[in-house]
Structures are given as C-alpha cells and as structure tokens.
Image (tube, rainbow, N blue to C red; front, side):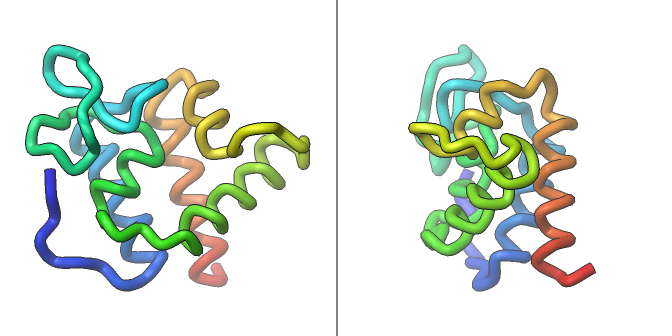
Length: 117
C-alpha cells in the first residue's frame, strides 16, 4: 500500500493512518503483515494488517520524526502514566492492545490534541 499523494501535516498523516487501520487489519509485533500473516514492509502492496507505527508509515512514507515523537510523548504521558520505559511508548502501547479499536481511539484522541480541540 503506497499513497501517491503525500500529506504534509501531522493531522493529515494521523487521519490517513486511522483510515488505514479502520479499512484494513491491525497487527502486533511487526509494522505490517500480508494475507499469510508474514511480516512485510508497511509500504508493501501485499500489506493487509498494520501496527500503529506501520499505519503511520503506510499513510505517509516520509513520516517525520516530529509526528512519531509527539505521538510517542502523548502515549507515554497519557497511557503509560509517565513511566520511563526503555523502548518507545508507541511500540509498547501497540503490542499491549487487544483490539484495533483501542489503537484507533488513541490516534483520534491524539489528533484532537493536535487540532486544539
């Protein structure tokens, strides 16, 4: 899955990532998987399931460090209760979820903070 038209804002990337997760499947432990549940790059045309980070990369292959850093900070402060964790909060959060609804809700909540709502 490769989007030809690039989004230039954090908000646009998050909205597209939400759409990807809503339309396709969600996965843990890898950025994306194919129909045989094998790991593939999130930009692959064979990708049919995405983790939270994989959906961001599929939404915008040029995901800026700023987008990832802001989402990581949001998750750490709001969902990991400010724990100082050795890896990134985004990965830990994704792999601790039990459904894509949880992931989509966090992206929507994060989007609200970016829109100032």
